[in-house]
Amino acid sequence: MSFFTSLSGLKGAQSDLSVISNNVANVASIGFKKSRAEFGDLISASPLQSGTVAGQGTRLKSISQQFTQGGFQTSDRALDLAISGQGFFVTKTDSQISFTRNGAFSIDENRYLIDSNGSDVQVLPVDTNGSVTATGIASAQNLQIPYTAGTPKASTTLDLNVTLPTDADLPANREAYQSSIPYAFDRFDTQSYNYSSATTVYDSAGKPQQATIYYTRITAPDETTGQSKWEARLFIGDQAASADGTTTTDPTPLELTFNSDGTLASPTGSTQFSAVLPSGASEPISLQLTYGTSTRQASSTFSPSSFRQDGKAAGQLNNIAVASDGLITATFSDGTTQKLGKIMIANFANPNGLRQLGDSRWGVTGLSGDPIVSEAGSGSAGLIQSGALEQANVDITEELVALITAQRNFSANSKAIETANNMTQTIVNLRT
Image (cartoon, rainbow, N blue to C red; front, side):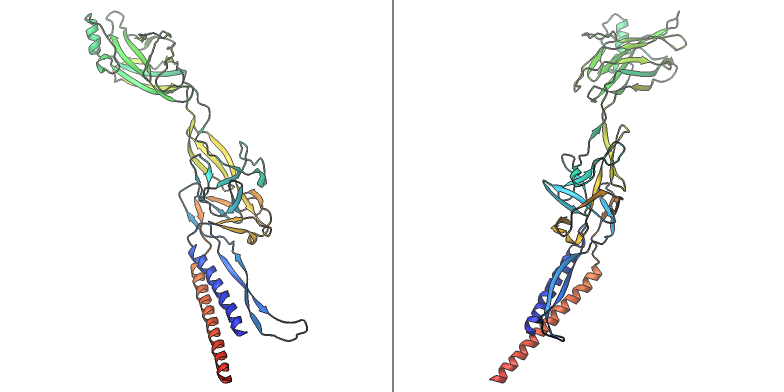
């Protein structure tokens, strides 16, 4: 019987070596939890037997998982998450729900939050204030990160101020015009205008277009009145708008008149330009141009200032932040924020009863009990740390010591089998 007793020891030592080897192999696996082989002794005894009996060997009772906290590895990614305390992240692939401590999350091509296995990370729904609106595993939902937020608005007004030089010359083409040669404005010909300035405006879909104003001097200061005149031509994208508010083949420029002291004499109010449809715009853009009181003619350089328009594009995603309670907040370029959901945390009455699925994932069994779902920091659920990943809870020194012990156990049982074999051989030789 000693042969079979030692054989059970060999099998036990081999199982122990396998468990330890698996722990060592996964020392770099994010969210990995080490296991421990647990053994029991075998006793063969009858009901009428009394006293101590020789054991019949050992058996593997179970391989228990050790759900102790692993160390944190810092990261520069906001979507790298770690749970400080108890609980599991909840993920879903098709209809299969699994649980993990691996918080290396990312965004897929459809902008859904996924884990490193491509499963959808489950979150709890929240209202605009970030308060959870539904609880329980049935309320779990996938999280899609929006790329834009807010409603775009078409530009309708453009307020500005500009300083035009008193000593500006007439453009070369304008001088030719004064000599009775036909004058032709060409925005691609810098000889046909003096200055230009530009800003960005938007159509109704929030698509940007460049609004450019070209300034051309018409007359120098009059010797009698001291007044001088300029023309302002408005282009939106590749289309010229008309200052008379109508669409014509030859758009009318806006005439600016300055007094002898440099103040703006006209126009005194707003000018409605005609609507134009530049290339790339979804709908026509019509601007009302207003020159402010700071617009003047002075002995200085050309200086456009105070461009203000009332349109806007939809806000573009700038940043994703995850709070310690799991609340995910998106920040957009227009300054708005949006509460997207709270990371779902699941706990179990008996985590050791979970079924291993591989890749640091576990599934529910009858031994584990149903998941107890909550938000981070509530009840027994731990807090979430953004910009960190939980390392495997494997102590490599401890595992190497256990590996030596298991190896010696294997060697000792091998020696016992060899001794039993020698004794049996000796007995056989005695009989012969």
